[in-house]
Image (tube, rainbow, N blue to C red; front, side, top):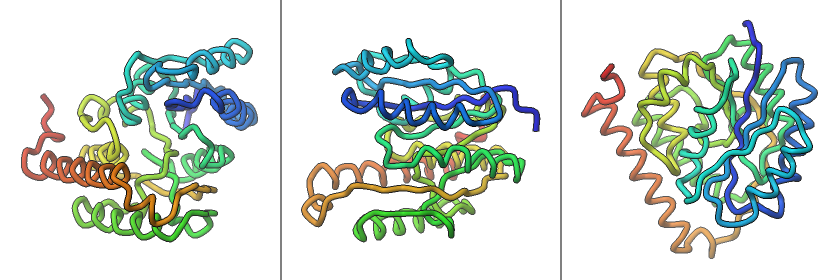
Length: 251
């Protein structure tokens, strides 16, 4: 695999207190890779000091770029926005906030090369992943993945971890067809790629520590709205894939 540049996208929203620290941790990992890299931080709505703090970091660190827009559009939109600005042969993303250990980026890259993959996804259900999060989240995650497998037949066991790598040619075909901006964008990217024949999709281990409240959080109105929106987006993807045949339309 001829790799000249690796691009990493970091979506950020309302993280002015931690974004510089997060970017520093990610940059330290990228600087140890054997390939040139570029780090692109996308500010998903300039409503606080996140853009300013990220820009200060970029001024002091090479091969780092900060871009953004005025209004919050959703994580999926931010990642696609960053991917469109990237130049890498392999393009990945990692969530800010550091629930995910950024050392996993090097692990995913090793898997990418080993499998000559089209896509590598970080997976909580990989047998050597280190996963720390409450049982409520585990139940919801398992249920959603069963739904995804039933609807789309994807071979991966976990679609939702915020760390993935893609070949550039995959994104060039997939990105123009995507519609989901928020919660199910990971699923849409994988479903469309698979439908277009990019089915060398494999999983890699991650180290993830999710901070999640108890039963009061899981029954909160905000959380329930998020779950319902994710289900709605997922069913809409199924409708476009199986009924409208939208994703296979070369127009």
